[in-house]
Image (cartoon, rainbow, N blue to C red; front, side, top):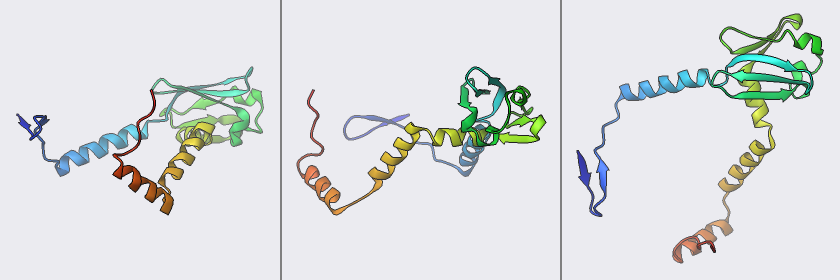
Length: 151
């Protein structure tokens, strides 16, 4: 059943949020996040000197060996033995007794990308406040808000 507001707009009937619904949502998100960056397979691309991952969700991710500090001193011959654990959570290099967490690797390399750095800087710049920024927002509000852009 839908209810009609004063402006004639119909809003769906709201279902109360229960503790059980919250627990289900948290469990689903935890399960999804636990497998977000798990690898299906890994290989070493000698031509590009890069490690390439096929993630379980179908994304392909690669990075030059020099950008992965734990692999910087390995040889191409050693990298040919690079494997993924059965659950996809780790890369294993048996010849070096090395285990690399896939989620940590992907997250670290994405966080260091120029686009991620720009987004982070823009987010922190937008969150700052000042007397001038507050005054400008107040003036714009009195004028009807932000000016429209020219088409």
